[in-house]
Image 1: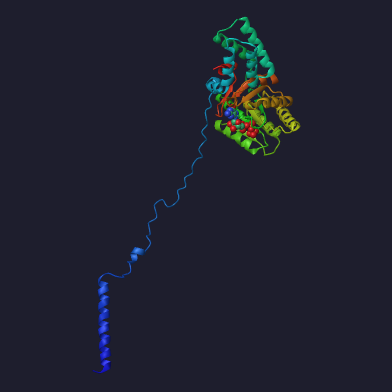
Image 2 (image 1 turned 180 degrees about the vertical axis):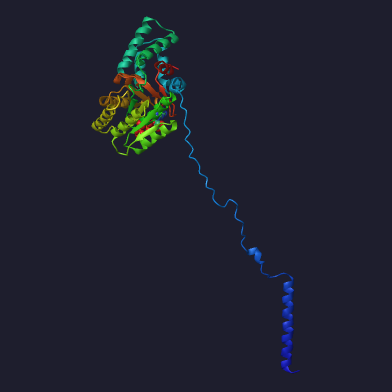
Length: 373
Ligand SMILES: Nc1nc2c(ncn2[C@@H]2O[C@H](COP(=O)(O)OP(=O)(O)OP(=O)(O)O)[C@@H](O)[C@H]2O)c(=O)[nH]1
């Protein structure tokens, strides 16, 4: 056979084999490309609400808190006061209940009172009275001795002092309460809490952030006010505190409000600066309305330091009442007596916790009962 014919035959056989193999593979479903529709992206119909719905929401009116009335608060907070003052009361009761009240025992009674910040003079007075009464009455019944101690403590705290908070005005002008004290004593908190007390009594109140030294102090005050629906007048940071006070009292007069509460700065580093500033605030206010109350806020936990502050402030402004804060945080409740003696003005309010309504009108009998609980 001719070799060319052989090549042709081989090529034909190879071609037949190749076609056969191809048909075989196809028959088993091998390398077919996936159907086009499997890879095509799903085009979903746009949801009916594709257009962003424009819902104009009314800003929710802030829910106002309903502060509790001030009357009876000291009773409510009595357990807290008793807890903090327990050691003073228990110490005194244990000492006067001793069978023999000798000189050493009286010295111990004196030490206990002085350690509780009662002050030297009032301590001596109390010891003197107790000695006389317990000896004269020949008391050896602990209950009777307790009764005498209670009476003497109440008289030392002086229930005859007028502790009314003068927040109302006269002759169409608002009452103006100026709140002074060193920073951190609880001034702003006190202003906020007094606002709550007045709001609970249905009074209209305006707050003045005359502590322009720190913007945060004004923010804090404003927040207190917003919680009970009172507005706050504030000025630029570092601005003139007297102009904030002036503006607030003017608004209070124009709008016929009951009370303007003025929060002030209390930097003590420069006494003369403080004098100038506070004096000016008071003078400027008095161009429009008399200041009905000047409250000095003292932190009860600072003990003797609090008395030093009291002295400085009373030289600057005529303090008419004391607010003793953080009485829940010290066992030295004797500061109530010492500060009244120091200033000759009554403690009108006491702070007994961190809650919004933990400021109580001071009631001497409740205070002494809590000491002796
Ligand atoms: N436990 C207790 N804490 C209190 C009381 N009164 C105030 N405080 C706390 O004392 C801290 C200081 O209170 P502020 O009102 O900021 O004091 P401030 O004198 O205004 O100080 P500045 O804002 O720096 O001027 C806060 O954390 C209050 O919650 C109280 O009676 N008891």
